[in-house]
Amino acid sequence: MRVHTAVVPAAGMGTRFLPATKAVPKELLPILDQPALQLIIDEAVGAGVDHIVIVTSHTKPAIEAYFAPAPDVIAKLRSSGREAMADRLQSIGRDVQVSFAYQDEARGLGHAVGCAREAVGDEPFAVLLPDEIMGSSALLDQLARLCESTGGSVVGLKRVPHDQVGSYGVIDPVGEADERGVIAIKDMVEKPSPADAPSNLIIIGRYVLTPDVFDEIAKVAPGAGGEIQLTDALRAQATRSPFHGVVSDVTRYDTGNPFGWLTAVIEIALADPSMGAPLTDWLGQLMRWNSVG
Ligand code: G1P
Image 1: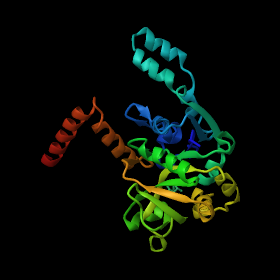
Image 2: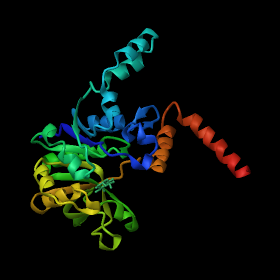
Image 3: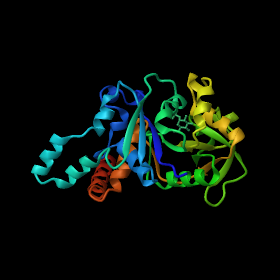
Image 4: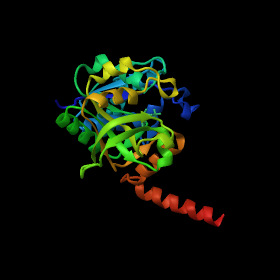
């Protein structure tokens, strides 16, 4: 069955971006002129998704406000001839069905995904962690197709230096990845110490999961950091069903902290047709001034 729903966990407090996130949810911080959340939605839509479930918190009303109709702004834009921007605003939340689920307690990623159960229903679904922005929909599309063909859950993977594995979910593979990057997974562990890690293949924030994961989430006890970990629910799936990963070299920006966000914005601006050239000039000047000074 084709994957048509994507869950975006967005209930976190964004502590790494305080005080900015005191009033503005981290998922709405701009990447050039768009909130990061819009890029995540566009990626999902590009992989065939037509229903987005945002898991948010009642303390973050701005997330829902982003999807609310804005007839006054749109009318003003149209009256001043800015049709393209008016159309763009009008399409937000209309080109795809957006629903909301709520997680009002910070109990971990597994718990957040569990909060989307009713909205997802009984079919395979994608999960996109909005702290990571991908350069294209290619990886998610590949995960969705692989879930369809194997009937089991699938996760996006990246190989990292061994000393970096402790911040991530790390998989225990069966053999080597094939020419498409596909690798079978027999187990995984959340935030292991590098010495105990079963590999240096980390789970990046893209998943396509079969719906039995909801029963596993309901059974999981608090794990790493005292939280209900999605990785612990997935490892239960991996023990009894086919479970695969795709080792990917898709462009990936980690926007979960201010430095990562800044470098993502710069790289994306450098690739932007209207900003790339002037930004390159400005950066060049800045470097020259710095080397002179
Ligand atoms: C979460 C997952 C982890 C995964 C990571 C990817 O961790 O629990 O398995 O590797 O996202 O970014 P978090 O970043 O929420 O600590």
